Amino acid sequence: MIEATAQHYVWKDIPREKLNSTISRRLITGENMMISHIYLDKGGVVPKHSHHNEQITYVLEGALKFLMGEDQKTEIIVSAGEVLTIPPDLPHSAIALEDTFDVDVFNPPRQDWLDGSDTYLREG
Image (cartoon, rainbow, N blue to C red; front, side, top):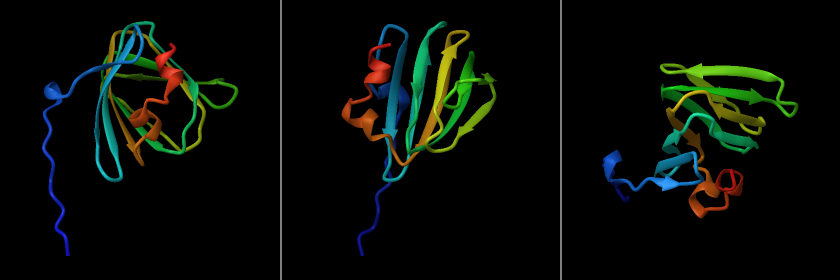
């Protein structure tokens, strides 16, 4: 039997990837989960999208306004110290109401983030 090896990371040592003029991130990926630090300038927009991954968003600083559903009519404000869970395949978008720092966790890891095919974020 092969014994798994633990991995230790230091966030500040992980390069910050600039996705567009208002959003950047850092990623750590395990076998079945991904955690990311997301940095959004006030007014930054994450366009409407959906994915098969379950998502947990924990806002540490600032505030995000999420619009949920295909029609984007359900609005949820997530402020510092608050958490939002997003089930797989639920369309959603977000707008940074302030300069915002959040932690996103995905299961399974976002393949589009790993291979750079997340054009919805890169063109924003």
